[in-house]
Image (cartoon, rainbow, N blue to C red; front, side, top):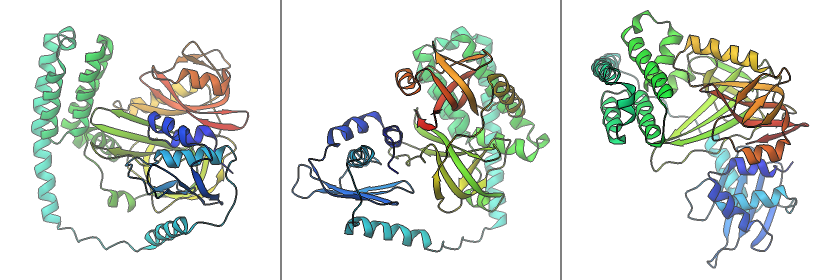
Length: 424
């Protein structure tokens, strides 16, 4: 079944790629197009003599184009998807270039992984001790910096230039506390554009809890310690995660969001199982790197998911490639705003530095920058909500709405209107 235009747009890396793709989404420059259950392919005539060859694995999704673009999907792939969405591409015999690419992907997926190099326990312990000592010193220095900031007053901090915040963030990076550094760096950028005193004070409180929790890490449970490490920027090795708890079940992709703020870009993809448990796939990209293509909202995937240690809702990663099993008829059961806020409050109490909480709301209305449930409870939407698009696709209401509660507001990521799942 072809993707909807909303699904195509959700897969695009940015708005400029969508605009460029729309310009090419006409039959004129295309030849040799076709599609089957797994692949979509076609050749697009550009300015050169040789057409660009576009191949799309619809089950991944994954994209390949012979053009020099470093974006995935590129404008040619977006154009081909838009043509397919509009019903302009029929079935056909798979082109040689698309078939070869699909075979290469299948071969790579079956290739056995190389055995890991044995770990030297003594060397590992020495590296860990060295990092802990560096982090201890950095946390102590940051504690003094916070004390000085509060002593001078929040109003003084709001007048500080971005370079002042950058200096503090750089010191935290040197102290191997990159997660805390990103929080400080993002705050400096927000101060420049008009962060208010209440928001700054709340962030300072979170930073203080992080460094105090680090000082008392010996008293934390395993889950609390894992959440603290993640917040400070000490990642759990992927091999360790894969060797831990693995959940095998069918998942529904309920939404995805990209943040491109500061030096790091981040992509969050939320999954939900049939019992209502959420898991988050997290991908980050630094300068010069690109994020992968998110799974499509509404897709159903059979997959083994390795779960990171920590409090619910946990982060996870796929063990092997997920197997598509069709599209979900729904995002799952929804709840009321009061129940959602109670769940978010409980999660925040367990992990005070948690930034976001997933929620699926039932039978909601949108208007005046708020979401309203059948009981009349309302919650403000985040400032960057695509209000025009939300109004156009929802008509002011939705049977279900999935999103993230972030800073006391809702970021709507996906809505279900009359059985149609639409990503925002």
